[in-house]
Image (cartoon, rainbow, N blue to C red; front, side):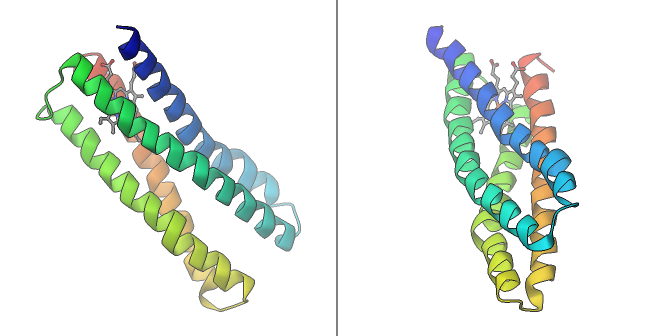
Amino acid sequence: MEVYLASVWVHLVAVMLWLGGMLFLTVVLVPVLRGVDSRLRAHLVDAAGVRFRTVGWICLGLLVLTGAVNVVYRGYSLRSPLLAAKLVLVGVILVLSFLHDFVVGPRATEAMKMGREEGERLRRVSSAIGRVNMVLGLVVVALGVMLVRGY
Ligand code: HEM
């Protein structure tokens, strides 16, 4: 019982940090930085992004680990439609996060620093991937909440 409770607690704290962090960046940091000199803004967004990348992957790792503990402890069937939908979306989130953090994002930063033309396009693609991920995260939270309440 204690292991299960600890696992749900870690699951929820990881959700708060991962999703709350993304919401904070989008809803607070980015709008605040709009009034700041563009080079300083690029530096701050880059530094916050790199820092959040580490935090985000630790959270995603913890979510998969504690999620598996919760599944086993509660004896959920992987065939349950809610859990299956949740797992598919988590898979999509992992792929999108990888693309955002290790492929498109770093290329965009590099191109912007070099003043290359594709920089702005890559930045927009990277930002779109981040937003889609955030929306998927909100949907996954809804599925998790429904799952616990037996829908
Ligand atoms: C982005 C990743 C994830 C997010 C945002 C997320 C979010 C949540 C939320 C908000 C809850 C509801 C807790 C409550 O209302 O008490 C929950 C529960 C749950 N999650 Fe996740 N989750 C994620 C990944 C996973 C993964 C990968 C698994 C399985 C491997 C999983 C399995 C579960 C299970 C089984 C529960 C129910 C726990 C219980 O019945 O006590 N989750 N999740």
